[in-house]
Image (cartoon, rainbow, N blue to C red; front, side, top):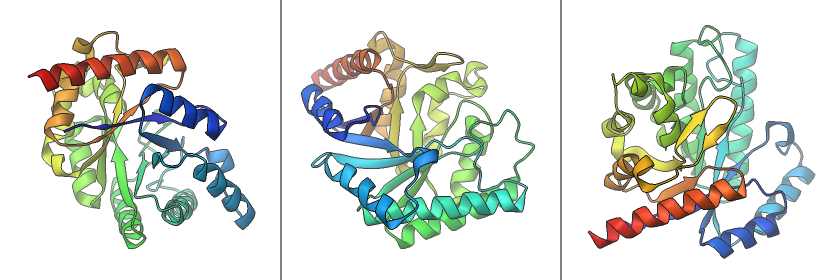
Length: 262
């Protein structure tokens, strides 16, 4: 299995982003929406679509890294606000002929107290169904903290909602569930390997530093082996600065060469 390597939209000019992708051998873009600039009118949507068109023929998948915006918020007004926004984004992705959208549960919170488990599962299931009706697969990403940082709870959320899986190998490495050796990174994937559609690749996440790139193949090879065995072919090198991105690309390229020689 030869994966498609994607980079994030960390370069503001799409033409420069496309040139960077072609120069270094990327075949896709993982497009993160900015919560402050989600298109909210026909004119804004037209401009956004024009921006995306400049990235062709690169494949584009979509990502909503929104802080403190949760479908399962126990405040009904906050939950409804999140649901409406995600539905609007699914509509945008569908009209742009996108097929995958990744979202989070609990991102930016330091407690799950404001969240309702039952409401989260129900609302996520509704959103997954809404996405399916428009040809968009809604995927849930594991985080370094919270419900989705625990493989057993992550599995329940995925199974209860029907969501696809986005496996973030850096979040898995940083999670307390893995660092305590109670779980392993494989436990985020093995219960639903056939639902793994996206992988986010870097070494680990460190508070104050963000996503830390790997220095050598050994840093991430066990987690990449999990992904390869699951046949997920969309690998996002999720480092948003050029030096770290190219370092990660070098490590991933070396990993793939080693596996091809076996």
